Structures are given as structure tokens and as C-alpha cells.
Length: 222
Ligand SMILES: [Zn+2]
Image 1: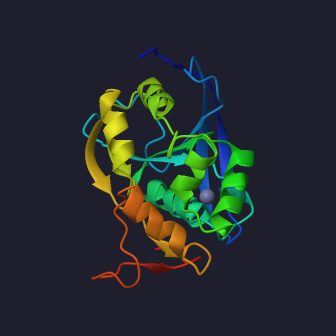
Image 2: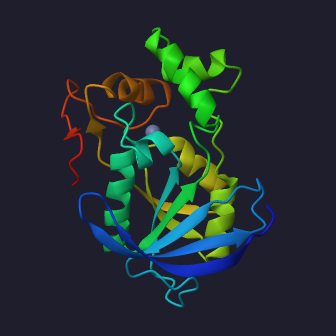
């Protein structure tokens, strides 16, 4: 794997629509393999990129960009609440949110909207991607691994329900010491999407109706 380097780092105070605030330090990079403008947000007590204290294992969340969910609060997915939860949990634990510019499981924004149209005709989210000539999931975590290495992070606690993220990070030299589950945010509009993610993507989600339901109400955090 080619090494990436930190290009710029700058303080970025965050304020979310619900009033939650956090102080972040945002990093850009040189040398990312896919040439995209991915960002790392350092949050909480883990802001030194090369901490001498290697007993610390930062909490890491690789979050793939979702314009409709992250910015506009779309109810068709759970990305907005996932992002909001991740920022708060990482700010408490110390670590990095990796904001990865791979919209729509890597197929791009326009293709994601085309896939939504197919889903409205009854095709599930994975088959819709395939029908459009894409793989079921085209996301890659090579750049995420490069970013972590550039930040001096080789051992992480991974905030994710997605087993593919842990597998890919491990294959690129990042040791996942612990996998920490995220909340599940169910709404009327995204329940079928979440059920499909659990079934087809083998995400570890517990949805209403399943035994020991751990589902949370949409829009609530923690
Ligand atoms: Zn989304």
C-alpha cells in the first residue's frame, strides 16, 4: 500500500442542527490512492496525530458520504443519525471520524438516485446496484487505511456494524482491536432498507420484531 501524508490540518468547531457541538480538527491528505478528497476529523482527547502513548486505542468510524442523508436528513437511509451518533461517541472516547467520499456504496450520487427509483419498483438496494451495472457494494477502505497510517494509527476500536469494514482494514494493515456496534435508527421509510442491509450485507443489526430488539427511534441519539 502506498503511503499517504497529511496535507493540511485545521481546527473546525462543529454545530449540528440539534444544537450538539464538538471541537474537531480536520485533516486533508496527499497521496490517497483513489484521488478523492477524503477527510479525517479528530475528535475528543485524541487530537495528537502521533501520540507517544501507544496504549490508547482510538475509536474510529469510517463513514461513507451520503449527501441526501448527511446534509438533507433523508429518511430513506440511516446515514444522518449514524453520522451524528458517531461524532458524539468519538468525541467522548477520543478518535477519528473518516469521512469517505464514496456516495451510494461507491456508485455515486446520480446512480444512487437511479437505484432508489428501481427500489420504488420493488427491487432491493443491492439488486438495484447490480441492475445499474455496478457491484452490490463498491466501497473500498484502502484510502481509509492510508489515512489512518498517515495519522500514526495502526490499532483501532472500530465503530461499525459492517463486517466488511473490519475485514478490509485488517487486510491493509490496521489492527481492529474491538468492533463497537452503532445504534440502529429505524423509520417508516428506511425499515426495508435496514432489513436488507442486515440480510444481504450481514450487518449486525437488531431490528424491531427480532429477538432482543435494540432498535432506537429515528432521530434520537444514544
Ligand atoms: Zn444514506
